[in-house]
Amino acid sequence: MNINERRSIWRRLKPYFTVFDGPLALIIFLLLATGLVTLYSAGMDFPGRVEDQVRNIIVAFIVMWIAANVSPQTLMRLAVPVYTVGVTLLIAVAVFGVVKKGARRWLHIGMDFQPSEIMKIAMPMILAWFFQKRENAMRWHTFVIAGIMLIVPVGLIARQPDLGTAVLVLAAGFYVIFLAGLSWKMLAGLLMAVVVAVPVAWPFLHDFQRQRVLTFIDPTTDPLGKGFHIIQSTIAVGSGGITGKGWTHGTQGRLEFIPERTTDFIFAVYSEEFGLIGNIILMTLYLLLIGRGLMIAANAPNFFTRLLAGSITLIFFTFAFVNMGMVSGTLPVVGVPLPFISYGGTALMILGLGSGILMSVQRHRKLVQS
Image (cartoon, rainbow, N blue to C red; front, top):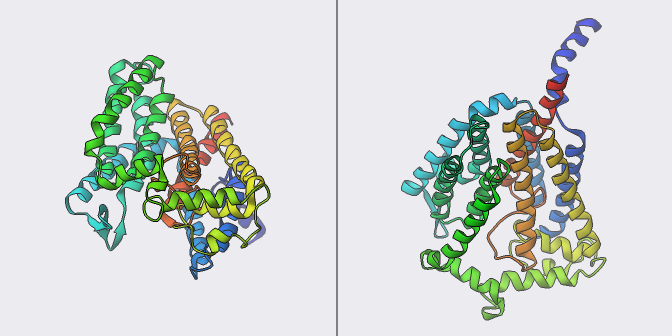
């Protein structure tokens, strides 16, 4: 093969290897690096945890690359079947799902699979598609139909029960509805309905869900039981001070006072070791991530891509906000990982998929302009 032939092959393949948005990829890389450093310290008593996370990152990178190469037009075509499959699988979980620790969340398809994770991306896709089709003819009933499309999977997920994932899917769908032009009057009415519904819904909550709310209000009522997570995580966050105790020198994590310290509560380990300065740096990275995502959404070529990119970006915000809130004791514990930091393959693949979609939107904006 001569030089000209090799150059010709590279010109054909080059678009597939230059799909990554530079600023977004750099921010994600810094977050993943921060996560591995923190995981090394938090997971010293879990041999192989860092190596497993590296494999998870590689898989998420492949998912990101594939998604970045999928055009927005293809995403629109996939929206309906992906949503339909997702809801069908949620119904299958309700009928004959696998029960673990009192929750029916998984299907056994060669391995245990959690269909609710699909809805974190399927929900904004279907609603963005729905509003794209009605961009010039939106009425109040359009938002009502969108709300029904959102409530069905959220209800199925909450029934499993999986309150954390239900909150994330609800947020993902709400962001699309809000960005599509939900009026402030309808939003105010919705908020009033939620306030009224809280006391009505209280008797229908599971015992452990009610206990989580009560423990959030006063964790000292059960300091060695339900309140243990919140008490120990807030101690770790506060004990880090301004500069932290230093990498691998956190006592709360090393002495195993922090439960789930490599997954949902890894932020407590990070805060104890890197302190307020480290938290400011981490939150700055998240602000840059959200800012870049919103910039991509603002410059997206059509209504579908604007809604999809905007909602995915705000999902990243919700992940970070809810996790930091529950670890610091300002929100109830709902089991939400810290994006790109917490250990876990499924959540990281969903984040990689969302990041790849953002890169696809940015890439095809450039192609449209050119």
